[in-house]
Length: 244
Ligand code: NAD
Image: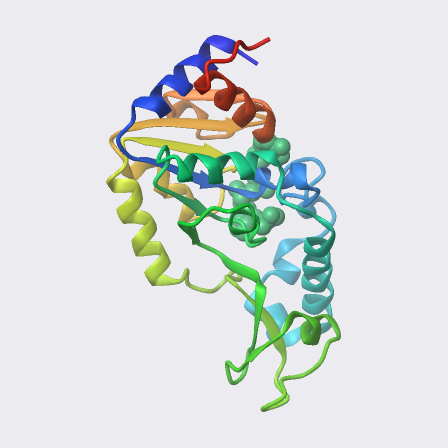
């Protein structure tokens, strides 16, 4: 890790007026949840267009259900890691103003973060794709039908072919426009429209990722490394510790 860069970002974070965090799947890989596009990611094992789509929900429910019940079951055995906890601590201390996440795992809230805008919804809430009636996780995992209309149950996530929740999207835009420091963590920035958000601020832009992304050049600072390690190093520096 380049220590002078960590020092600089720690300094920016201490002195910024409004800091916003944008997270992607790479934020949760250290918790044991695979991302989509890196070497170990889901996309290397399965074609997303066969499962994460409105078409799959309507025409290939077995496949759709199999994929999402595996992902929901993963959440029961995985936990937020120290990086999630540090972000919650930074919010509590007034160092960050909110988190915008593409993740659907709910780990930021589980770690204690309060202002979290979930752009792609949440795997943890389930509803009927026909009548909208809510159901619990167990009903979905057991492949039960809707208790009201016998329709197919689904998680409340944004599938390819669906709109982002407009209220959340509006709040995310406002948060970013008002920020003077934005830190993107663990996103390939390939999913639209979330990948447009970093460019709505006139403030400084930092990206933390374990490899370079296509948009890396458009950031003021690139910190290469694991999200948890980099966040711990920034935190240590802010608390006056020496980095080794
Ligand atoms: P992505 O898979 O496209 O990109 C993840 C990025 O994070 C990659 O560039 C990868 O190299 C990097 N990365 C992986 N592990 C890292 C680590 N420990 N530290 C730092 N960087 C790391 O993910 P995305 O940009 O979020 O977009 C894909 C879509 O994936 C989103 O729509 C999201 O809803 C969905 N998704 C969510 C989860 C989750 O909720 N945890 C998991 C998989 C996919």
